[in-house]
Image 1 (cartoon, rainbow, N blue to C red):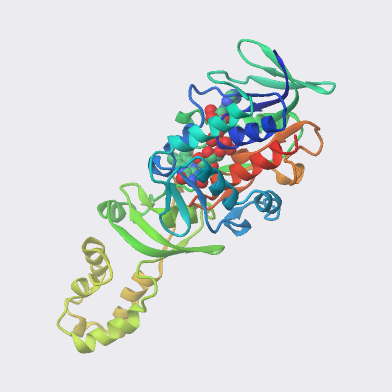
Image 2 (cartoon, rainbow, N blue to C red):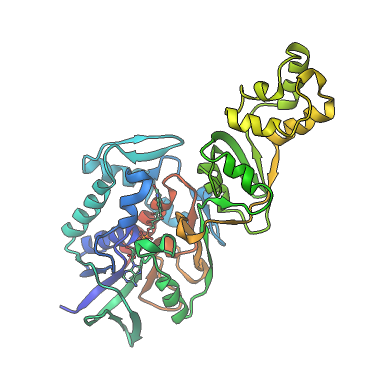
Length: 391
Ligand code: FDA
């Protein structure tokens, strides 16, 4: 058979979910993927345990040029729907932190569940098959692969974004959008470590491995999460989150003792423990190496000798450290891509291209980007269902 009701490009999270739903409605479905295994990003996600959704997922956890676009799909297929599916398959899971749900075992369980759903819906999944091009002739789509040209009434583009190219990530979805006249919001790396080239590069490198609770802010957002110094710059959940808001040239603010008013505490300590050195005093809030680094900017060896201006400067460095990253580690390590197919050109109910009947875009290829913590998969499931239930 070479004609299908639906051909889905990409056997990732969104494509498999969409195929299972469309197949359950008796559509003949072919899912094509150039990788030799399905859903490789699910496999490596969440450190191998797949943070498959978030208990508190809602539209506020997403970035998009149109923040309203994601609402309809997220409302119609919620995190609780996905949790019910996971429970139906007897997959054990736990909440790690902040509503983030992870498998107790391996992420392969989620892949096996999705494949089982696709099989039950009679989907045909063809791996190691790259889609080279899509054309529309009359009402039908022609989908070319290296071996043959297939036809379909509908094509779903579920081929993700360019993050982690070594995992088969591609820009093919944007090429198709462009070919069919849809606009693409410039794709940029998101949920990605930030790097430094200025005077901070060496001190940060020297702190590599130090992790600290932090509050990281940018003009548009603030996150309370762990921050990690690396030999290239800054990483950890707080930095990954803020990277989705950051643009080259922007400054970010680091509070490395969130919830602590260090200036007030320093003034009190100057009276109560005047002989203490600033470095030793700081270790009650910061790991030793970071405390030493902050204190290296202070000339005085005892708190007693520090004038108010020195206390203020030290407190500000910890509570309000302004840094200007030079860049990010880019698509090589970015967990997701921000930007993608412009949502103005898609139906928020079905994910169909408004100007090209039968052509759909779902998952990461669309300009909807989730916060860290299971939100990106929830978007993949919800947009996959919105399309699969409509197609
Ligand atoms: P996805 O990228 O999963 O699938 C696209 C598929 O299309 C791929 O299988 C690819 O091979 C295929 N393809 C591309 N071009 C093709 C072509 N021309 N022909 C045929 N096939 C083609 N999110 C989350 O919520 N919780 C988490 O724990 C994590 N963890 C995480 C860790 C790491 C290291 C990364 C890189 C990412 C995450 N994510 C995450 C993000 C999450 O993986 C991502 O949002 C989803 O996988 C997106 O699903 P899609 O199905 O849209 O694309």
